[in-house]
Length: 249
Image (cartoon, rainbow, N blue to C red; front, side, top):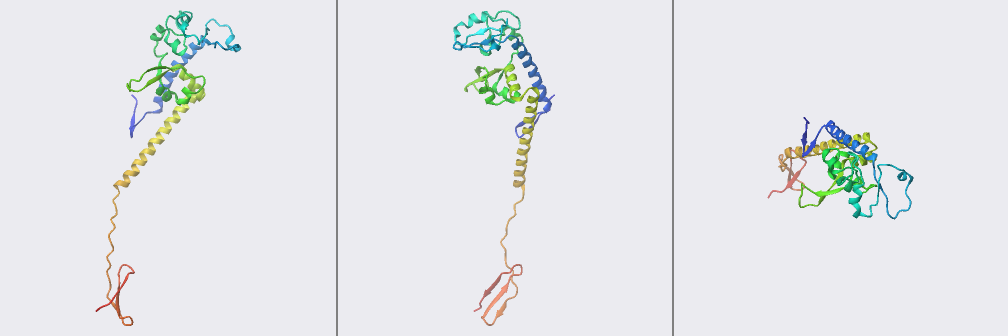
């Protein structure tokens, strides 16, 4: 049972809840990365004349792909072996969209390992920015799907969870960096919620404070004094220094 507190529309959960959630997703991403590194295909441009030594090393599991010719995808899939079942892929959604050597049957068997997450989940769970997903090289591959929350809106981007985890490790410097970023974001949310609550309390105190009604001062005069030289009368207020001068007919 997770204790949740709602403060001014902001849901606050314990830090342990975020850490347990990230550990589970991270474990699946690590398994995906380790299995993918065993047999990663090489993308060779048709115009390039030289290839780096690291990519020229012979490997049984590596396959050269000419991405400029998309009409040979069916023929190419027949020569690609699934890293999970070691069988040639007749159809592979993950290979076509994300370059992963995993057939559709193995993907259906383990949906959690090859899970697709939305852009919003990628930013929330791995503390990434839009530039980390869309601008940082190498660009992350994504698939598009209709937005279930807004049918009239545009298509949403879906990323492979394992690739997003690798990008998060690159940005934050590993697992410890991701944990620190999650804790820092949780602290920032608590500070923001506290400031918002203090602001509302201050406004509430001002509105509930009784207003002081100012009453006009009424003079209370002493006995009048006659001035023979000027032939006039005067009297002073008892509570202030006001003096009124007048004449009698």
